[in-house]
Amino acid sequence: MSELSVTVIDTPEKLQGLAPRWNELLAESVASGVFLTWEWITAWLGCCLGERRELFILCFTERGRPAGVAPFYRERGRGTFGVRTIRFLGAPEGGSDYLDVVCRRGCEDQVADALYRFLMGQGRGEWDLLHLQDIPADSIFLLRFLERVDEAGQYLELAPGAFCPALELGESREDGWPRAASNGCRRKYQKELALLEREGEVVHLVEENAGAASLERFFRLYGAACGRPGARLLSLLQGYLERGGSSAGLRVDTLACQGKEIASLLHFRYRDSLFLYLVAVDKTFNPKVSVGHVLLGKCILDAGQNGYRRYDFLKGAEPYKFHWAAGGRRSLQVRLWRKTPRGVAAAFVRMARQAGKLLLR
Image (cartoon, rainbow, N blue to C red):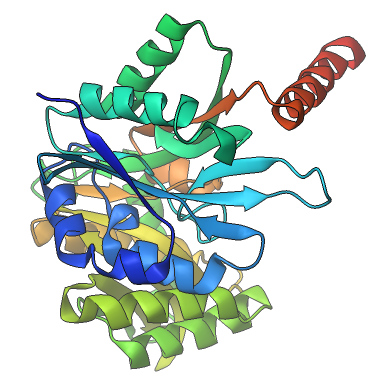
């Protein structure tokens, strides 16, 4: 492969022109997920870019053919000497997971090398800290990038990120439950469903292609259950839905008893997986029953019976996720400082904090 050329996308107008090629490249990449799609990225921009943040997307091409895209933005810290940090679009707001540099399959090494050379060469005056959050630990791009940084002898900090519990749905028992689901989960589900059915008829409503009305209904229950309206999340999802239309893959599962909606789960459908994004549960309906657990059980059963291969709970340490899960994926945080006054100062401040933890605990 010849040397890759690099183009900086720094305005929404320029990004708009990448729409068809972006998802085509994603389809050819090992890195994959709803949070890397053009629809999600641009919806996030509309809600979260704000002041002190500017686009810094790097596009890599070989003789005009897309080879990779680094979906970055640049954020300036407060004050005259605020650190200029490069981050992934989609973070930290919005709960995005599995963020990555998208590379055409087989081009990860070349893209990692081109990205490093650009950041340390032509783009070196644009940043002080590269902070990549929620990048999968098994990212091929990350492996190649770390090798490149190590070869150059640069200081880099690699730290644990989030963990996304998941349940494989591929193989099922005779009763329809995934083989990976624990007996404890099944027994708890059956016991609590029986208790709930004493209250009245229990209905599980599945909206595979949820639209704007379904989204607004979900957030009414979400606001009542959480005590906050979730206006930014609603705006983000509305923007995503507007861009994705019928292919957006939003799914809403709702549990009703006595004709009243008591729990609802908002999912993303992507390829052969369901991703649990938001949960709304009325905990006052019957304090003796975890209606959220009942709805989760119904969702997992339905997903396995309808051809889904994986149920991903996304990041979070909530106990119910680990109660159901039988595995998952780890993400990492990467920090690479440039040798600028601001970058060096920020690195020493962080090192001092880490040393303080070691000495005081």
